[in-house]
Image (cartoon, rainbow, N blue to C red; front, side):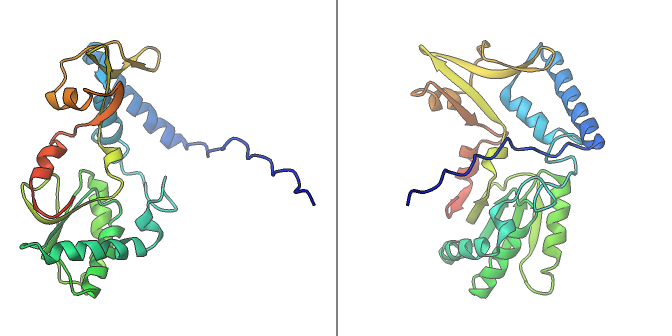
Amino acid sequence: MHPGPPPPLPGPLKLPEPSPEAREHSARVVDAIRVDIERSGGWIPFDRYMQLALYAPGLGYYVAGARKFGVEGDFVTAPELTPLFGATLACQVADILAVSERREVVELGAGSGVLARDLLRALKARGSSPSHYAIVEPSAELRERQRETLSRLAGELDVPIEWSMDLPSRVDGAMLLNEVLDAIPAHCVRRERGNYFERGVAWRDGFQFDVGRCRSLPPSVSHATSTTRARSIRLPKRSWKRSRAGLSAGPL
């Protein structure tokens, strides 16, 4: 018997229409970025565009209060699907804490707090609880959601949990990042014939990518692009190189 014809390909994905409130908020975000471009002479680097879109106070995606994670949000990450993710990660973290002096865990961008909850439970079950758990979170809305999630562990765990806006200067233990690097504003850089071009955003009746501007790039960017034609370079306000140097013992 010959197999039948293949099933038809699915049609274009039809996304739900945004609510009037969402459209109004989007228009405010667009206007704020447009004004910033105009004040900057008609062009901003891509990392600035990304910073505004994601983190502009009261406007950016991660700080404006809309629900982001889980079934009622925009996307689902692995820890939201099953506690097995945190339990599996706990195996490695327990080994790290066993050879560190201060037994610290720092999580950057903890989302809804589910990973921290599952990880702490699994570490306790292994007899490997950290001395304390620190969360670095720039979003006030997410900090509140994390506190709500982790408050349910109050009678279950004896691990102090603290929040900060900034990376610690020193970590002796493990530093965790789950789906965080893609939310860090990135420089977009092109190298052609030994010259460096930074991709940016202009406004011409709408946002337009512009690669025609040359800028004096930080040495770290020039070095990173020295052997490539084009790539994205992620440089948050405190560079990851400096942050990694603050990890006195344990992996990132």
